[in-house]
Image 1 (tube, rainbow, N blue to C red):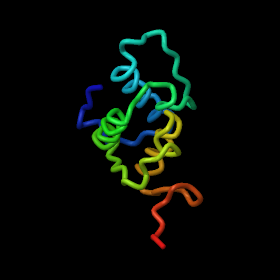
Image 2 (cartoon, rainbow, N blue to C red; image 1 turned 45 degrees about the vertical axis):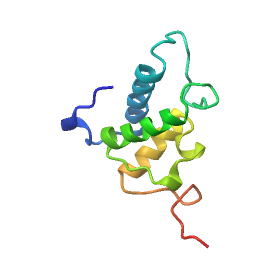
Image 3 (cartoon, rainbow, N blue to C red; image 1 turned 30 degrees about the vertical axis):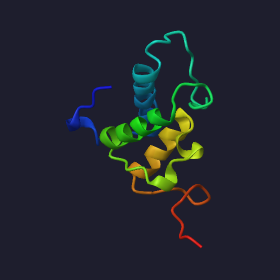
Image 4 (cartoon, helix red, strand yellow; image 1 turned 135 degrees about the vertical axis):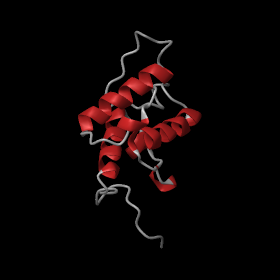
Length: 110
């Protein structure tokens, strides 16, 4: 996906983030599998769409495309496991909300 810096950090809602992330995943990881159907709730790792190196690439794209820095403790299946999870995570973190209470927030250590 080519990211135009002039439009990278404009306001986007969750469906727009989902669509842009889906386009990136299709172009980067599924370009050789045009008949592969990926649902919003399908697990990217379990379906063989992405591997650990792909996760790192995805994290870099979330930063460049949406201005979101994914903290190490946020690299989890619940945040990055599906397209819907990614869109929710990016939407929450773009708005400066951080993680929602009850999810994988950045609580203090014990």
